[in-house]
View 1 (cartoon, rainbow, N blue to C red):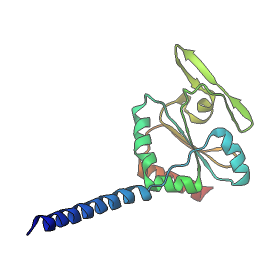
View 2 (view 1 turned 90 degrees about the vertical axis):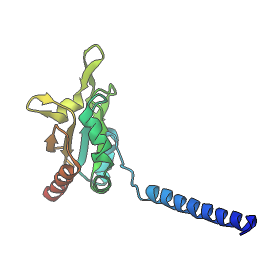
View 3 (view 1 turned 180 degrees about the vertical axis):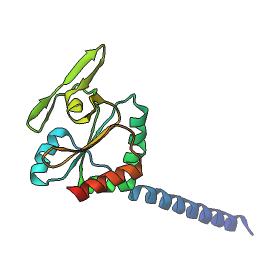
View 4 (view 1 turned 135 degrees about the horizontal axis):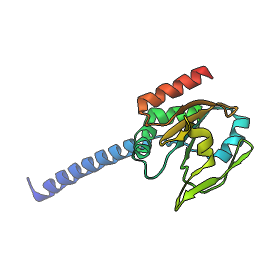
Amino acid sequence: MNNSTKLKIMLSFKNRVLLFMCGCFSLSFSQTETLKTYTFESVDSLIANNPKPVLVFFHTDWCKYCNLMTQTTFKNEQIIKILNQSFYFISFNPESQKTVNFAKKEFKFIPKGNRSGIHEIAIELATIEGKVNYPSTCILNKKYEIVFQYNQYLSVNDLIKVMNSTLINL
């Protein structure tokens, strides 16, 4: 076999490997749906036109279980699909100092000391037995009534059960 033939075979092999890698790369990105997130303010107007339940996920930067839910539960394709189709999803950090206008009320951050505090909307929607813990998940119906509250980690399977049950019972 001469050098020219060897070169053609090597180039052909490299081209096939390159095409294979490109195909795998494009497949891994083409099927991923992005989770749509909303703000409290935007949900007010959206519900008027297209009523859906609202799922609120309260989390903090320092909470390891919050971060775990963010990286696993809310990255799951089935969770993303259900949330995007049937819910308005709000991800909210209760340590945010931004004033929130929601359901014809104004909610503010309440400082509790040196660089700590809690947002009034978390107190309103995430309080269970007099306490707010993180992560906390709350589902509201179209009238903003709480239909589900839970203040611990929810796995993919558990959240799917909760969302499906909520949709059936609304």
